[in-house]
Image 1: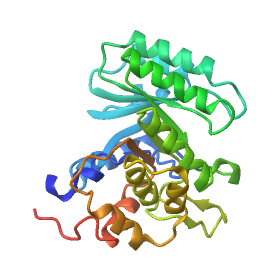
Image 2: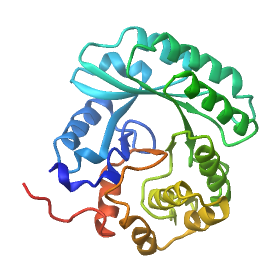
Image 3: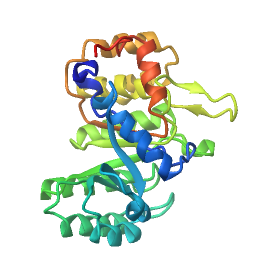
Length: 279
């Protein structure tokens, strides 16, 4: 079963089932996640993402990513139940229009305090004022030895929360230039860029991002990436990544999705995952 998921797609999707729009209750989300961990696509699934305050309510043995404001994450990390394995900590460092520097420093202090733990730390930075300086600061933290990475929001309930292909292309190249891993969240439920028929909002496709990231790793500029990010035909995108399936994924850590089944279905339909998995 481990051979069903190629290296390029390994740990691509973190299970964000408890977060909107899925909002699955924790008593349902935990067994569903454990079911994914026992299934043929387990290698593609990352940890279960949970709010910091929810950690004491999880009775099962499971790997988690802790999500919350620095002020909520800090106390939660002081008393982690012994049966939980923390893989990562994810925290927004500022609201749109705010200076991200103070929040970065606050979360960095937490990362230093728990420096003996093998956790990755994701600093969610608004795609707004102060972005490039914030990325420079994260690069400095990595040079210091902290396992810091960037996190960006690519969707939500309003159009302004969806960066344009040009904006996202620039961010990917900025991370590439700083050798800075990044994660994405929100809006990436399907492989290919599309318009949601219920809201009219245009969602990014995770396959678009994967193709663009591979192109960035080869040295391409934002203009080349923007075209890939704007594409709405999945078959050329699948062709663009197929030759790289046996390679580790560069730069892009992955994304959180409230659905695991939808990414699997899309990748299967595009021929990037097998339809039949040997028992």
